[in-house]
Structure formats: structure tokens, C-alpha cells
Length: 304
View 1: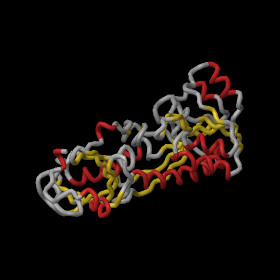
View 2: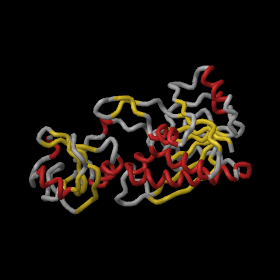
View 3: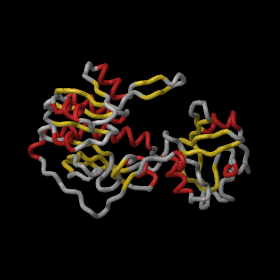
View 4: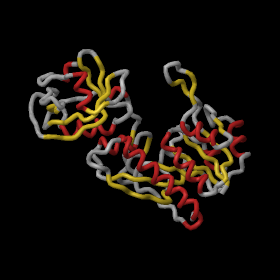
């Protein structure tokens, strides 16, 4: 099929590769404009932009699709379908209607649960046992369109957002190829009104660890925010991200370090911090981290 691909982050790259491998014609790739990055804060293209250029595709980075000019340019591509995955711009109705088969979105949740911007983070943070991928026919509402295909998977007990992200990206790439191969035979399933939840964008302000919460909730927060933006605490004025954890036995005043291996008491139970990152440094497993940081037993991490 003749496809317009619309995506921006790393999650979307395997999908683009899968479409190419399946033999589809990529009429153009739409991605978010380059953003300042790195120490020099120079504009850097996103992962999809970089991959599409390496493959020799026409890459377009409009700041909006609301203008008549941008909509005319999109329609002129004469695409049979648009495949959208973590693109980052709202698609006006004129864009949704332009391809013959409309716009298909790859969404990393089991809709209608976790509509919105951060479904992977929110599923882990909420303690969901399962998540998955849906191929959805896009409409004007936020992730409200009918679902063409879905596939569920179990969330691992110690899985982080980074790990789940990679698994869901792989499933999404396979599922969209499957959907396109049988598009005319698929029956869209209207999403039920029951069970709707919204995965709001992660706010950095919610990433500071509240040790007064139960250990299970602290653990889910740490894993759900790993690697970005990273749950954090302060020690001796230095911000330290926690990128891995698990629940362990232990009790004490919330925030107090219970062992040399950084078991920390919570409002109920305790968590073991397994991977950490000091500001400006690389991530380290707890044993390596402690050789340098040496956070002592009895330290109260809730006081910074």
C-alpha cells in the first residue's frame, strides 16, 4: 500500500522498519521538528526523522497541520492510508479524511484503558497485570476510535517502562503489518464506554519519591518512571534517580536506609533500590553505586 508514516520517538522506529520490510511504499514520513539536545543544545532530529533520512525518504516536520497549505500538501501525497504512532501532533479532520482508508494509530494500551500520552508509564504505575497494543481507526476524539486489532501481554513483576516499551514496540510493528494485510476484512470494534481511563503526560513534578507511600506503590512508581523522567530523591544536596527496584521485607521510619545495599523503609514495607544514577553521571547497579556514594544505614532519604 501507499502509506504516509507519522511518528517521532524511538518507539516508532521498528514500525517504520517493519512497513518497509513488508514491501509497502512510503510516500512521506512526518515527524516532530528537530529539538535542541546534547551539551551544545543544537537542534537534533528525532529517532524517526534520522531513520527515515537514512532510508532515503521524504521527511516533513511541520509545526502544525492546521493550515490549509499543510493539509493540501498532505492530501497531494495521495496515500491509501496513514500509519500514526507516537507522532505528537493533533491531526485535524482534513488530515484524518485524506487517505482512502483513513489514519490508523498504534496505541500502547488495551483501549479504552489508558487513552492519552503516557499509557506505558501509567499501566506500570497503576499496577496493571496486563497491557497491550491496539490498532485503532483514528477519529477526532482522543484515542476514541474503533479498534481493528489488539494483542495483550502480561507486565513483568520487575519490568520497567523501558523494558515494556521495547516489547510493545515490537508487537506494534508486527500488528500493523498484519492489519494492513487484511484491512478490508477487519471489522472495527467500537470502544465500550465502561473502563475508560486517561494516561496523562508525565509531569516531572510527580517524580520525587514519597517514601511514606506503601512499598508496592513506591516500587511501581520507580519502575514506571524508568528511565524517563526517573523517580528521584536527594542526598547531600545531590539529586539521585532510581531506575530499578523491587519490594523486600523490612520496616522502619519511612525513607530510612535499612541496609548497605539500599533497602529503604516505606510507609508500609520496604524497597530495594537496584539501579541508580547521580546527576551528571551514568546509571550504575547498586553495588557499584554504593562504592562511591556510600549512603549509610540510618540515613533518612526523605530529608534530602
